[in-house]
Length: 117
Length: 114
Image 1 (cartoon, each protein chain N blue to C red):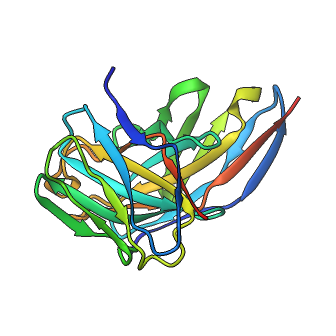
Image 2: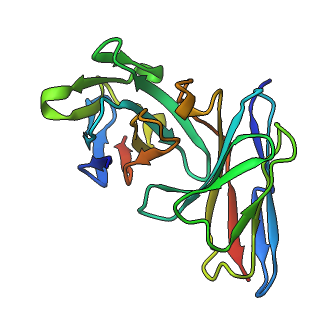
């Protein structure tokens, strides 16, 4: 089965701790994205990557970092600099980077809920 | 600049009655438009998308949406609500103008009363 997996489903962070959320896809998609979802708001883009070894900041990148060493994987680290990390985090991928006129449909993983202890 | 407005934050219908979730957009370009559904603590699932081929778009689970350029609307409808339709629905736009970014509405929570 092709799809996007995120782990863990729930993650707890202690004060001052960095935590890493995993996102893996076997859809052979070039582009991957991280979104943050807060109650009553739409999704906000944290980072995106159009291709391996390249990534760009989204609207709310402060306090987050990413890497894209493999096409299938796009982990997100929530650093201690992110003062309000409690949220639902969604990873997505799309077949081609949209600015190349490719398919713009994004496919989403099941999400990780991050809670602060 | 592009924006998406979902006109109702919460809609409640009885099972078996029609569903209407309203979405207006503004964009300098002809956008691609999507409806996604999210069940509690789950990811987003694509219901349907409009990409200028036909103004009436049919999606999964009996949903459809009509693109009306004159009204800048893309409302989601279903003739008869089912209990399993209770979820949050997001209207999303993509401008296609060299931008990676999707613009999300704030969501409409659909409740279905037995």
